[in-house]
Length: 267
Image 1 (cartoon, rainbow, N blue to C red):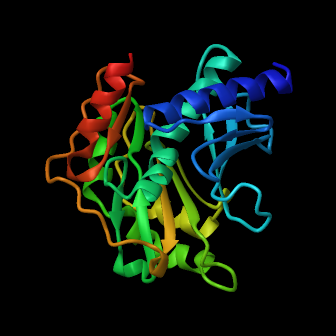
Image 2 (cartoon, rainbow, N blue to C red; image 1 turned 180 degrees about the horizontal axis):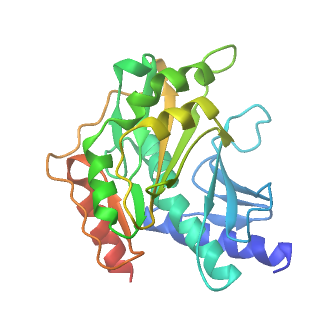
């Protein structure tokens, strides 16, 4: 696929996925513009990891050279390059864009809010965890029942401190595989954090005999800039895998059901 065609596919998918959140985005040259000064930029994914990888940057104030951009990468599966790109953008929207939109709206509709004592001074907004593969309900249930981000705090904090570091930080977690062949990766602002990745690998998330993975994204903002936490409705957060390699989601306090109903309506 030519670079310009690849860009067009990614941008078209971003417009579609943001519409699911009730957000109107339009293609404007190299970026996809949203409400106000928000925009989504696209860049080539480094490392030659395959045609299904995309790098998307959520610009908070387009036009300001020093404005923060929250970068994240995602990978998608499919038979064609277009299918892979489409699925990658869907994955990014499900986990990452959900947290970014929630940060702007502060309604508790798309993601969860938390102020973890282990991350003193930082407000966390976590989107749904996309869990996919065989037996994904076990991994999804573990994610819903464990405080993963606070457990990684000692490894994360050094990357969040220092001059100029009170800007928003995007933290992506990817974990899974199978027993004896697992993977655990934490990226902070798009870059692999080795200490946090090692801490994630050391946690007791279930490793089964068949392949299963999970992806989740947390946006951390300086506490003095964040609003008070939003309390979501109480409820049970459960996951049932409809078929092998199906995508499930785990989110505490019952928000998973709302996300799953919306996705079913689109199919």
